[in-house]
Image 1 (cartoon, rainbow, N blue to C red):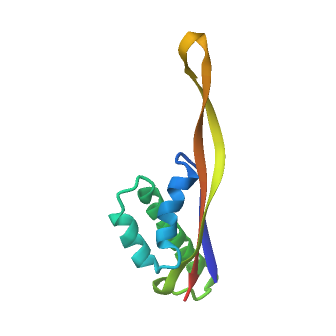
Image 2: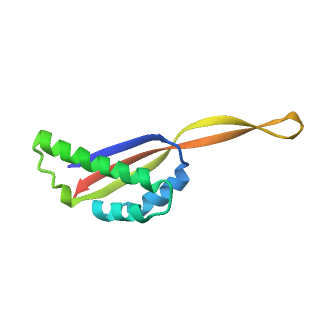
Image 3: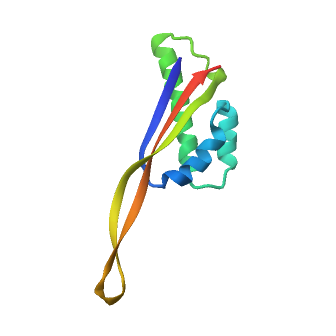
Length: 115
């Protein structure tokens, strides 16, 4: 049985988010949350919140469907970080010119499964 949670248009580049996501892929939920709590990266906090949301989804699915999911045996089966939409901004440059600035976002998906 698998459960998932998704975070769309999170305001960090996907390259920076993948650095943290690679650290928790394949770990148990408790180990993943401990790793995220000790990480100094800015994306670690929202990623920990996303993993906790997936665990809550598993508990809700267990209560609703009587599926028999053991929350203590969950691990991070897959975590993917994809490019989200981009916000375009203009920065003033010399001699009356303008330069386009891209504000990147990420779409993060966490899939938990039972061992």
